Length: 211
Image (tube, rainbow, N blue to C red):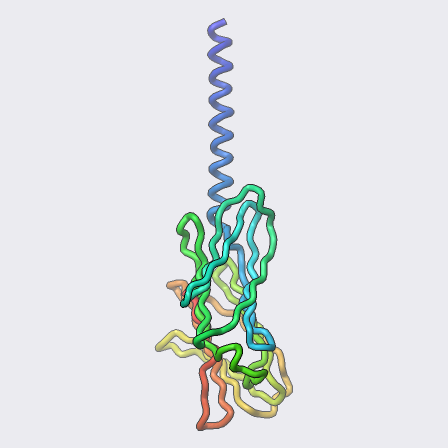
């Protein structure tokens, strides 16, 4: 009888340990993937839209300070996998996004230098719209559309690790472009749109900086 009782106790302990191990494994998986991917897009009116995918069991809160917009992820067993889009205006020529989670994981920080949304007045220069999709594998896909008659060239500034996209008035009939980038070894990525209407007027906006 004693042996039978000991057997039941041992079995209960084993099942309990397995159950705890499964829970820990699930939590660890959630910790690593609270932010699956995200897209930042400049709309045709000059505003920006942030769209991000989150997995089941993760909820999100948004807050803003004078210098940055914070996106905070935390565990919630009732949350379902879904996509969320938030719209933002550019103020003080800068738009900053900071991703945070309850585990203090190393998540991206994105800074965009662009003209203030309310000052654009529908004039976006040579670049119409663009979007950047950031993937978990460290790559970023850039899709952008230019005005009619704009020539596009791609370059790389090795001294400053900047991916340059040169937009100049020309005769090209192509409007839509796609480019894929890999982050630097330190996890950073910088993309500059260099717009040149003529030799005397060159602007480097928008600029996108990820670290």
